[in-house]
Structures are given as C-alpha cells and as structure tokens.
Length: 198
Length: 101
Image (cartoon, rainbow over all chains, first blue to last red; front, side, top):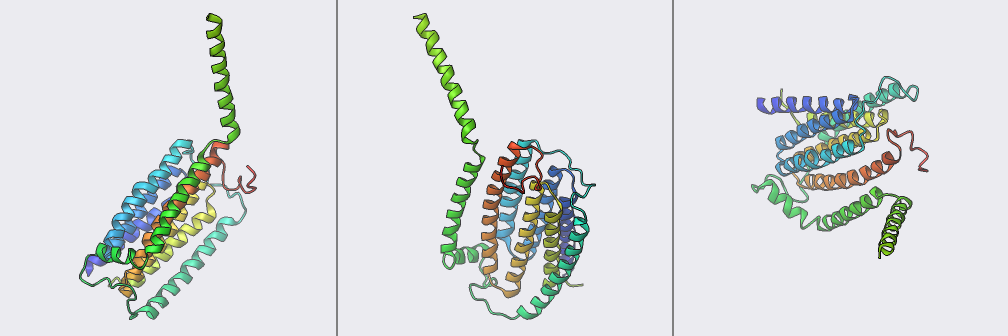
C-alpha cells in the first residue's frame, strides 16, 4: 500500500511539473519536451490502475507519434524562437485566467469527491475488469463487439483527417500554376535551341 | 495515508485546469495545441479512474477512442498551423482572428 502511495505521489509531481512547464516555457521545443514528461506520468498512473494496454498505447501514440509531430512542425517552420512572455497583450487576461483556474480546480475537486461517493457500488454493464483475463483481452472483446460501429467510424475519421491534412498543407493553386508555367517556358526554350541547332 | 480514487480525480482536475489556463493565456498556436493535449490527458485519466472504480472496461474503450480522435485532431490542426505559419511566420493566435488569410 505504501508503494501505491509513493508511485502516485511521484507520478503526480511529474505530471504537474510537466504541465506547468508546458505553459511557462518560453521556447516551444521545451514545451513539447515537458509534454512528453506529463504523458509518461499519465502512463505510469494508467499502469497503477491496471490499464496496461492503454499505458503502452499512451507512450507509443502520444509520446512517440504526436509529440514527434509537434517537434517536426516546430523544426520545419523554424518557429523555435523564444516568445516574450513578460508582456500581457490583453490587459488583465492573466489574472482573470488565474482566477478561473483556481475556481475550476475547486469545483472539479468537489465534483470528483461527490462523484466517488455517488458512483461506488454500481454494476458493470459491459465487461468487468477483474474477470481473471488479461486487460487487453477484455478490451479487445468489448471493442470488437459492443463498440464495433464506433471503431469503424474511427477509421473513416482517420481517412478524413489524412485527406484534410493533405489538402491544407498543399501549396495554393496560383503558386503551383506559376511554377508549372515556368517549367513550360524552360521546356519551350529548350526545344527552340534544339530546333535552331538542327 | 492511502491513495484512493479521489486523489486521481483531483489530480486530473488540476491537470485539466492547467491545460485550460494555458489555452487561455498562451498565444503561440503550437503551445495552445499542447495545452489541448494536456486537457485530453486529464479526461483520459478520469475515464480510467472511473473504469477502475466501477470495475467496467467501457471507460478504457472510451480512452482508446479519445486517443484516435486526438491523433486526427493533431494532424488536421498542425496542417492548419503549417498553412498559416508558412504565409506569415511568427503569427500568433491573435493575428488570425479575422480568418481572411
């Protein structure tokens, strides 16, 4: 039991320090690295709550793919310059955000305590976690039976995201057209010189 | 001192709030996206905690879908950011409030 407490406290510190680091880092690259720290902390808490598959997926997909995508965009665009955080462009925004944050933490904490009091003792409606089978087997059975339609819709969503990313990351049509006509001119000149030679 | 589920829920509340505050305060669109990821992770932690409390695997399935949607959202969002920042380097979220290119 003491091990659970130590694991939770260490992971919670890692998560909160990482989250604050994301906000307060002046350089976007540092923010991305702090985000990795937070994601690892959340993965540790997933393991502590017997969600082993999700912990692995958290590390692979989030820390491995999404943060790398962030860093890739940062480096590709060369926007890794430090931002000046000392000025407040919109007057009074930061104190207001602080007040809202404190109020939200209070309300959500009250809600959490109350929810635990209300929701204990409810019965499992899909599959129980403590059925003696592995976490991944239970998760797979529910995912491919009860949630099969949502799973298929997810694949459609991914295809739409890929198409959208390609459409948005393409160059505008006029620039592409200019390049094409430029190439055509070069080809024309080339053929002209060749015809002069002959 | 025993860690029970309430601690996890309070921690995820704090994580969600830090993400929301960062989204309100920061102006770099990339950092704002990272704050959205923080909020999604806080919600994931809540889902896994309630899955543990209720002894029901459905919460973990929802986290699985949230992961996929987060990946799709990041792809589309970074596509938009690349399109904006290629035209105007060092643009902040305030600069694109008109949405007229």
